[in-house]
Each structure stands twice: as C-alpha cells, then as structure tokens.
Length: 636
Image (cartoon, rainbow, N blue to C red; front, side, top):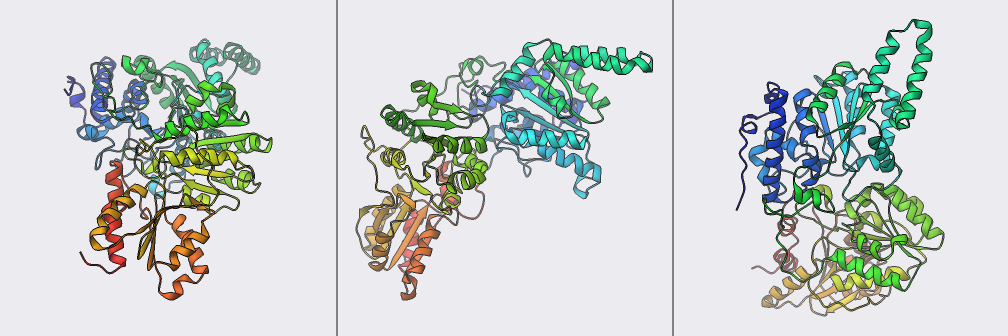
C-alpha cells in the first residue's frame, strides 16, 4: 500500500520563494514533512535515498536564506537532490523519478532553472561554481543577474583530486564563493583516505566557530600596535584547538564543523556568511546519511540506493531469480583466481560494493584497495603495482573509467603494463540514465596500442575472461560486462583461459553473418529464430575480442557470405569500426560486399528500463531481424 504523509506546510510550497515568509519554527516543521515526503516518494520509485535524507535540513536552510535561481546552488553529487527537487516546483513529478519520461535522479540543467549545473558523477561543483562566480564578476551575458554561487559538495566527493584543484584556484582568485562541505562520513561505502580521517578529527574536536568569532571581536578592541600579535595568538589557539584547517591554507575562510541537522544553527551560520563574506568561504556541515529513517540509518550503505520498498518496514522485495549478477560472477571468479595466485590484487575507486570487490576484500583484506573517488589515481596506482610485479585488477564502472583516460594512455598502455581493467555497467544501464551509461569504453580502449579488449556475452564467458586476464602478463587488458543478472547459463567452477583474439562460432549459416561483441548475442539468437521463417539461417559469432580481432575468421566469413553485420553495446568508433577498417584494407568492399554496424546511436539516451533504452537504440531482436531483411532486400 502506498503511503502518503500529511504535509500541510509542504503543501504550501511551490517554489523556494514560499519559504521566505516562514518562521524558523515553521521551517523546522517543514523539514520534518520534507523528510517524510522524500521517503514516501522513493519507496514508490526506488533510487538514492540516504544522501537526500542527510541534507533535508540543509536543503531547507539553503533555500530559505539564498535566492535561487538567481543564487546558483550546485549540488555535488546530484543524488543528494531529491528534497531540493521537491522544494523547487517538481513535487508533482517526484514519483516519476528515474522512470522513462520522468525526473532525473540527478541534477539536470534542462529539467529546471533551479539546477544550474548537471551533476551525476562527483567532485565538479567547486570548479563549476567558481566559473560562474568569475563570469558573474566579469559581467558575462549568461551571468546577467547572477547572485551568489554555492557549491554543496558531499557524500565523499571531497576525496577527488578535482575538488582540490578547484579549491586551490578559488583561493587564489579570491572571489566571493560559498563551498558547503556536506561531511556525512560516507560516500557510497564508508570513506577511505587521509582526508576522511582529517575531517573526523575536526568533527571530534571542539567546534571553533564561536571561538574564532570571539577572538576576532577581541582583536578589534585592541590598540593598533597590539593587533598583529593578537592575531597570531588567535591563530595559534585555533590551531591547538582543532589542528588548523587545510581549507584556510587554500585561502578560504573556514566555518565549522556545525551540526547539519540543527536547523537553528544552520540558519544562523548561513545568514551570517551570506551577509558578511567577501571572499571564498567553506562551511563544514556534519550530517548523517539516511538521517530520520531507521532502515536507512541501520543499513551498511546508509540507504545509498534502493529498489522500491515498504515505507513502514523499509523492506525491499526480494528477487525470485536464482541467476547471479554479472558483478557477483566477476567477484567470485577473481576470488577463485586469487586463491591460487598471491600476486593478484584488486583496486576500486569508492565502489567496493558496486564492483563486487567487497566480497574480495572479505577474503583478502590486504590485497584489496579502495582509493576513494579518485579514478585517475586508481589507474596509475594500478600501473605502479603492475610495474612492481603484481597482477592488479582495476574494477571501475565504464562511465567512471572515462575520468582516468589520460592515465590509461600514458601510464598503462604506453608503458605496456599489465593492468587488468574490469569494466562493470557496460552498455545502457536503465534508471541511472545517460550519465551512467557505459557507452564509450570500447571505442576509447580499442584505439590504444598494446591493449586487449574483451566483452562477455554471458556470465560463463565472463568467468573465462577473468581467467584469461590473469594470464595476460605482457600488456594491459580489459573486459566489460553489463549491470544486472546474467542469462542463466551453467557455470563451471573455474573459467578456462581463452586464446587471445579468438572468436567463438556459435553456428554456421548462409547469406548473412552476424558478429556480436557483448551481451546483445542473446538478442541476435532470438532474431535468428525469427529469420528462419524467411529461409535465412545466419552465421552467428561471439566475437569476444574487439582487440585483437580474429582477423582470419572475419576474412573467411566475409568471403563466404553476402553480408556481415556487427553489433555492440557501445558508441560509434568501436568494434564495428575496427572490423570495417580491416575488411576495407583487405579489399572486401571492392566486390560489392554488404557491411553494416549496429551501435548505440549518436545521442544520449534518457533513462528508462534497459529494454526500453535498447528499443530507442534500435538494438533488440526485432530490430536485428529487420536489419538483416533490409540489407538482403527481403520485404516483410
């Protein structure tokens, strides 16, 4: 049964302007209603719950003090923003979150003027806010009428190097800019690294914003000759109290830590800094991910992401399928390999659960490394491990691996180091939408010299590719696999090693050959069943490798068929392009041979179910069947 809470105050809110007339006591009640509405909505839609619950009070405070959209509030990461969406004119659509045609699960510029910058990945907000602040001060056309620029960076996003590059530049430029550090002691999983420990020490120490204010006032009362010494003494006392702050060394005025669930304190601090700040200011706000909803607070990931659930109990409906996910198959295959090879190590960038490496860490805690939201570092760290004789498996979602591309080129491929890239979430991923689609890795990896690029057609093939990667010691390799459950094939205990560059012929047929790279193979087989009625039995090949290609097989197939179709869950410029280039060089096209390549279209496909997204991409079985009939000139 759907639960709709009573929200008399929230019912009055159409835009943030409606908060301006509320008393502080009413704002407190509004926050409670906003939390209930967020929980209720996500119980119906699924999505990112914990991060939004942690910023309910902060969201209310920001929209009551600042004047969005004139003031630019940039949320980083974007999955914190469900409460923000509710307060900014989108409450009537909040139960369409992450569905086809519905609200994005992240901030999206085209969705609302209250989303000034899109953020589905992390750690971009300070750079973007600084750019807007500079444009504002330069009087740029697009910045006409801009007010304050506020970056809300949280859920572990401060651990990424880009955030520090932006802090460094912002301190140097000395523009009026607000950075709110939402320190919830979490990202997707418990945070790692020195910065997390540093923030914990700050939080556990005596909050010093009052001390700082008192010292400043005391200094102002002294005669001028004594002021400089007093200022130094004030800084020394502050350093003894909390150890100083790295943020002030970057050139920011630092305020905090403050309790992010104490609305009275939030309102007081935000009013003060808005009225008095004349340069870059960082407000350190401590929150609890999942705050106010016991099932989220008590879960290991603090309710980071969830399917639809029962509002009263928090219980998520269990899948009735016994088919393992690709992620689990990868993790278990890597564990099996690591039991027999102590040089195997695993690396992830703040995604131990999402990549399955939490299972690996349980077995080999000293051989698993979570480097935080730092994909560039993860790649080069893996390269260092490989250079020193280890066998690193760097497990990163396809969409996040894009952030480490220069390191893949310069630090791995150029030096021919045997880093193994386990690329999860390949292809279209459903409700997370285009920002999380694994669309480009085939193209950007296959273009690199020395790289082996594989794609699993099912979970059994994935096991083989893990075993194969273990044995590739003379160059880098990558294998990609999708989100979700496998197809239900039988799994052996250990994966066999595949000959590098060797495709697998599924069946020999006539007239047309279909060369599949990845999990569209099942759709190809379904299309082939429908083609029998037209007298066509396609040759079907599981390519396995985009690089190196099985050139001898491809040439033989091309010579023996009228047409060849490649299909891949990736963008233009990948597997099909390499096949076309090879056949062109062999002169196959000079004799009227027909070639077609089915790839993801040259657009960003909006969120929907994976099947719906592949319908948009024209890559499901009926589309493959129609493509075959079209190129053979057969009318239906």
